[in-house]
Length: 311
Image (cartoon, rainbow, N blue to C red; front, side):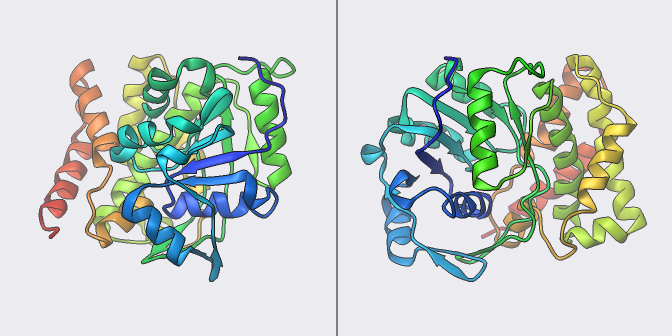
């Protein structure tokens, strides 16, 4: 599929902090009748009754049960990774012949799982970088939307896939910053590296971004966890280095000091975290390549111990 059609209709599944923030921004430009938030059961009923509160303002997105989903020009996944398998099935009705599908999930594996379900021709790689959305109860607040790097696996300037061109025009139109890296696999690993360091450290310390920005030892722990990712990346034919760590720290420093990463929000809400796709993935790759990963092993153990205390 080398789509050049303008993106007019949007479906999104996953109305957590990130999903609410992005769909709220999109709805400022795209008419509500061309938007569908896919949800099922009690969750769908709650959204219909209570709407979504974003930055103090109620928004009533059109809610589509899985059997009501209509073909969309763009389908966005913003669920947690442990909800992805179910979400793929619930959103299947939104995937038409020309639908572009993106995943803004953490980790480095969601695009492959979605492509296995819908076909590679539908899927572009993407990630959310630098957004500071936080959720408290039913209310979401966001001050910084960051940037959305996206594209095909490889993107040659001046010779972009038609789907990439169409999606770039869409991001520009709705006012969301985006960029098209030449190597999207490397970009995904850069984000993975940052999440491994920032999310896990914040969850262990139960601290907002400001602690990681100002605290010498907290920041050192972030860096140590990221360094293990850099070491493993070379074995996966991904080239990362100190400059990538410095860039991740620069992004960290742009976030609201009072903001909280998704894993910390999960810990505070006593929900299961995504530690398996962060430090858990690092540990598995370490075993695969015979590379010690003591920092991530320790972070994973602490976070899983926290999870055991959840009721």
